[in-house]
Amino acid sequence: MAGSRSSIFSSESFARDVVVALLALAAVEWALHRAMAPLAARNAALNAPAAASSGAPDGLAQLGAQDPGDFFTGLRSRPRPPAVVFVGDSQGMVVKDGRGPTYQRLVARALARQGGGPAAVSLHLGGANAFEQGALLLGMLEAGVTPATVFWAHSVFSLRKNEIRAELVPLWKSLPAAATDRLAVILVGGDSEPAGAAVPFSQRFLQAASLRLEEWASASASVRFSRRELSEKAAILWASPLGRLVPAALRPRTGQQRDPSASVLESSAAFAGQVTAELRGRGVRVVHYLSPIDQGADPRPFSARAEATAYPALERAVRESRGEFASWVDLLPGAYFGKYEDGSDDALHIKAAGHDTLARLFLDLLAEEAATR
Image: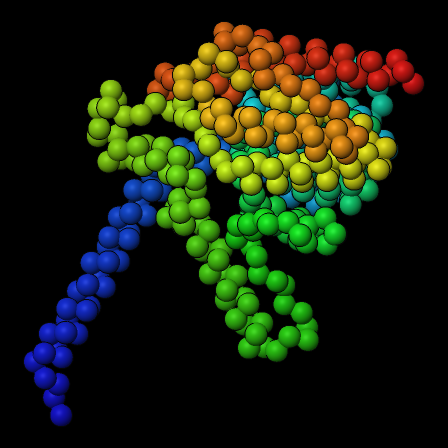
């Protein structure tokens, strides 16, 4: 029996709605991909392995985009453990005026002149938060690499999230359960358990399909956009093709004030203390420091409430775990900081002169330690 006119029209209407919805989704995906491409390119460049130098080696081993397990295996195979490990985010990786090396490389060069094994290791990753940074340190210990000293950089920016990026989820899940079981951490992508030989085929098929679907979704600009903070979403939308049509004078400037929840700030600080206790138990000296911030930046990058919560919580957790704590928030004058592309103050990333200042501080701390031995 032929379908009724209403059912035919209903089917055509449904098909038309599906096509329109797919076209709309494709348009959104295209727009977000265009807006997020520069950010993805900057992150890729930031985390890319350093080019091999034809001159004397400077003694700095950088994690970059390498698999952490492979990186730690390479460190373990060297004759001596590293003297120093730096861990943090892009604040230790960017030289705003491009006129010199980072403080990590400056310290590594100074130590390399003393001979020995790899002088310094950089576990800095662009945008890395305290949970990711702590996971890298714990993974390093689990791999059998025990450095003499760890310098761990912090800010409200690095304490604001309780997420593990997809690339670090396998490392996180490989850590001892005692270190991760009770933590309220969000695993972003890659969360499917590996299928074992005893698992039925149907279940293994569903697991594999789920993993492929998650990998596809994680590559989607729309999904990656949805996982960003509200403030980051706003910045991405303003950078989209449609957002650029708005006159520059009417668009918000890049400098923004972050006000993360107190619970996340405190849990991040507590995890930093937990990792510190593990490092101290292996005889590692652990120095936590608050990275410099441009005190005159407008707007200030973090809310006063967030700073009043984060800094005391971190210091308390570090000292209770027998670590060292230093606040270098107001160490550098405003002239040592740069600007964003739109001309607004970059209160976080410093110029070469700032890296020189920090390198001298690190070398002084290392010299004081050596003098007491």
